[in-house]
Length: 314
Image (cartoon, rainbow, N blue to C red):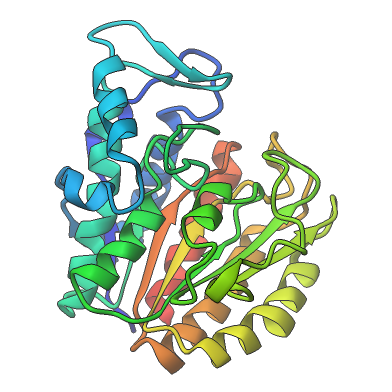
């Protein structure tokens, strides 16, 4: 039985993009309630987040972008950053705490305190580019964690598995020419943000270290499992990652309102087991999983529960 950490902080709820916005504080409330009611929470090791330092955030984001976020952060009300992303007074502190939560999980994994960790953080991160917020995201939590693991902990090779239903454009662009980070993404295509075609494979020395598998609307558990077994596993076994990071979006669930895929909570558990197998073979079982999307509260909380249980059983 693996030791699995859990990152959460009530200040994540203070990021508020307004009534009716799908990326709401209720997402984390539903996750925490489900884990507590099912008894899973008592099996997890709590990891307390602290705000990430700018020195780590600026490994991925331009210092001018970070400065602009600080400058525009409102004392009250909301400031729009793109058509569907805004900041309230609690947003930027939550974003620093979200990035810092994933870094705290990285430290816990590297210290051997836990084998894996699930980070119930918000705002999510994988759409955030080096110089702009987009798609509900301010800081790219997983990209920052990947660089942190390389710079602070000296790991050579990082695998990022992004199974969110939307393509992780920000993560892809962070490592597009870098052969030390293997980025693998399944996503509904064509769909927001419009990137993630199979021809996007990286550039320069990083060519081939970006693997996009566009999925057609309606594809479900068997389709995803086949892709993971036939595409991800051989690529990862060749790459031999020192650690695996999951951009854990649960919006490819069949009940999610923002997409049209067919995954179930059982499917997410099976995908987790495949990724855990990769981590065991090459990365001493080390897995960091960070929440991205998922907007049907029942489907989200059930899928997270199965995901975390699979991590515990890895």
